[in-house]
Figure (spheres, one colour):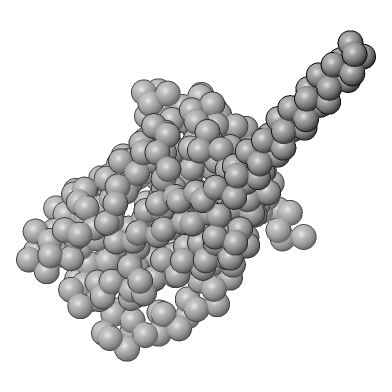
Length: 345
């Protein structure tokens, strides 16, 4: 009798353990099937390639995860952007910020140099630097601040000065007000180039230009055509003072909360989207320029040597007053020179 009772108790215990194992499997499956919704924010309009690229990447992620990861894209500043957008990421919101890398400088000061003026001469060298050991270290430092850099290479062109005046030297910008984003690097760049920077939200920019609150703005030809800036300013000076590019940022803990298989898809798709956009932008640039010319826009080259000299104090201030490690500017310039030499081979 005692043996029978003992056998019955063992059977009950085994059934209980089996049930627990089943529960754990069910819980794991439920976690894997849980839907995750992330809001993605940027300032671009539907006609601009970055807007289209974000929609494309989000769509592929949704398809490949069978709807388990949904990224809702909000353009034209509908949600937090610029400094505020990256702050949402740092604070742990289910939020993806798509911004110029200069905003990372608030968390990792060396990104101020990376996004600094007159740094790059071509798209190709930028792409190579993005994948260098130097940038890997900077990205790791960002992760210590709970910001994961999914990509840095959504390039849409060099930024130029758009006004109704021919600009060739820093002296030509004296007394002029130009709209910039609310980024210290952008504001400093325009000020040292000779104009007075006026930081405005994008929603206020075109009204400010049309009402002559500002004398012009800076941006790429893709922004010019996509937002119809050409209706208000008819001259573009090829200052190429900053490379127009965006990075994609997500909170590290939020990213790690996504089940591994889906997390891998998110990372891969955002990494794939940058080179895709760069190719599209490069292939379509001449067409965009020609269309702007057909609308009465004129282009001119500038004295780059004078502009290069004018902005040098920006880098000196970064290392002296803004927390950038001494020697970062020289090290990055040296790395770029190596990259340029390799690209020539």
